[in-house]
Length: 214
Ligand code: E4P
Image 1 (cartoon, rainbow, N blue to C red):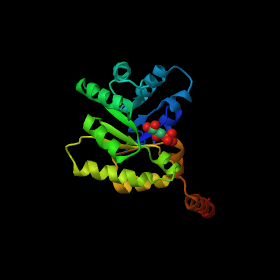
Image 2 (image 1 turned 135 degrees about the vertical axis):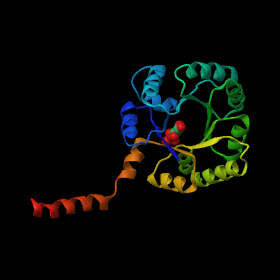
Image 3 (image 1 turned 45 degrees about the vertical axis):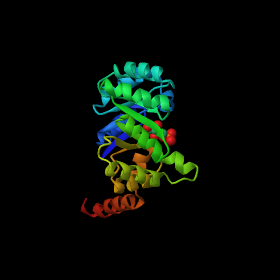
């Protein structure tokens, strides 16, 4: 199981890397817009920090534009993966970029049908969004389970799942239990995973008892 950092913030990415929690990085236009600097420069800096895949999203919505942007983004570094929205033109672009040896991630997946189409188009990764489904009272984890079963039962579909829009430590635990390939996790959730009140109470009690030996 790989864990990616869902962030374009270098400090957050470095902190996760120190803990072995940065097998890759996912960005999107919203995450990059939160940072200072130019779009391409931000991605270049992330690629200098991370040797695993760094996912960068295109803004075009027509297949020619997506392919053009994808080729340009791929020049930034060998480890760039092109994130493409789940639309018909996006799927056409996936096929072209795949034929050129460029890895793609079909993002904004909200149904198993969309995941099948993306996998058949040749996407290296499919990226279902859990939290945004939960937000509208659908079961994001349920969708992840279905997509995982489809890919396990059809090994000819050589696509890996990246579970995205992860909002809670429980999402991380449930996805790990399911055996989902890759989880992209915001740094806030990584910190929440680390904390437990009984750990803090235990540390405090041990420190107090150890005073006897001083
Ligand atoms: C990552 O690839 C996605 O863009 C990201 O996880 C979306 O998360 P959000 O739904 O919390 O914005």
